[in-house]
Image (cartoon, rainbow, N blue to C red; front, top):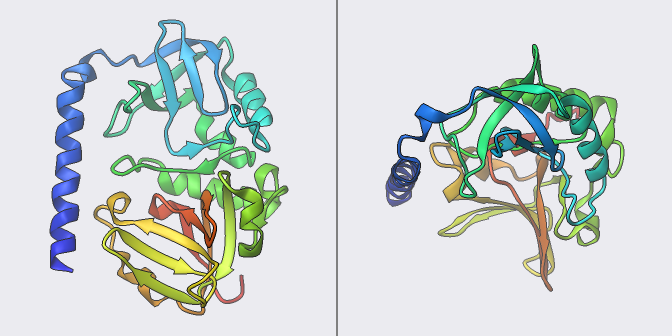
Length: 254
């Protein structure tokens, strides 16, 4: 456990150092606003300056693979920001590896990221250490889930037994944890007790830097909802959970 904490500590500061070196003095030239020239999809836009902006805190279905609700997310995003002046709010990491700006996008007093989540057209998705507005977006997602709109209406929350139908899609999955085990790379929360043909959540240590994962070791018999990319092979399906906001331990009455 001590070595694991040391590893996470070193990994975190290595990440920060590499990002700061790669970005140089870019923070001094970050645009605070811009006119939207092109809406690529539900969570990415291009400004008149040519800068691409990837929305922080959310993930929408992929247009390139024709995923369910991808077109609706793109159309709603285009309605919100197309041809308009938007204002950009940054977090700790300002650009991703594709050199896209990472921002919360505002039109007037309304946060576009949040409106997409509340409409059920985006899932909450954070990459540490960017966690600004997380509680606000999680509340919006809870409301969308409660009202069963967009992604929460269809396909909604799927069961572990249907994961093969959603291979390579991002989905919300609900199940009762039967088995928990860890490897050198992460923690597995399994819905099936058998070691063969299993299904479950996978939480990699590298994406939970600074988060106490011990609480997830005592979840046998508890119901959990997680949102992540489904990846299936011949003998298992796993849902990749990449931040603490993508998994929710349910109360007994839920």
